[in-house]
Length: 197
Image 1: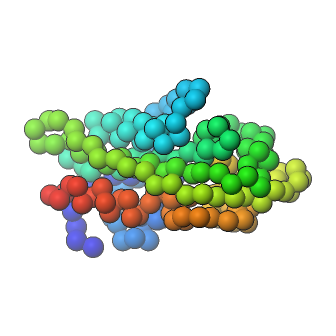
Image 2 (image 1 turned 120 degrees about the horizontal axis):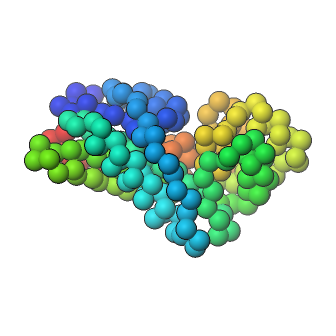
C-alpha cells in the first residue's frame, strides 16, 4: 500500500477495528477519541445516531491531531424500534442478548474521516454501511456463560464476531466487517474523497 502523506489515526479503542485495518495493510496509530457517547433521543433514527456519534468523535480527535487523517467510527444495533449501544455491564449484556435472540435486526456502522486542512479549517467525509444479523435464542444460563467467556462489553448489542463471539450469531446478511464495526469498502470510498491524503 502506498504511504500517505498524512498519518492515519484510528480514533477508536476497538481491537476489532484495529485488526481489520492491520489485516488490510494500513499503517496507523490508535488513539481513542475518549468522549462521552450520548444516548439516542427517543425515536431517533439509528443511521443518523451512528453518523452523528462518528462525527463527534472525529471532530474531537481532529483538533488533537493536526496534520493527521483521523478515522472515527460508531456502531449501533437497531431492533423493534430500540437502538442498542454498548452494554453497561454483564447483566445488561445478558438482557440485550436475550432481547435480540431470534429477532432479525439491523447493525449500522458509521465512519467519519477528518483532516485539519492547512488553511486551518477541518474537513470531514462520512458514510455508513448496514448489515442484518440474527442471533441464536439461547436460555439464560448459556447467555451468561457466553458473556463471561467473550466479555462483549465494548460491543454494540453485546455481541462480536471475533474472539469466539461468532458462536451466538446464526446469520449475517451483509459484510461481516460492518458487524465488526469498520466497513473496508466504505473506508476506501471515503479515502478516495481525500485524493491528496
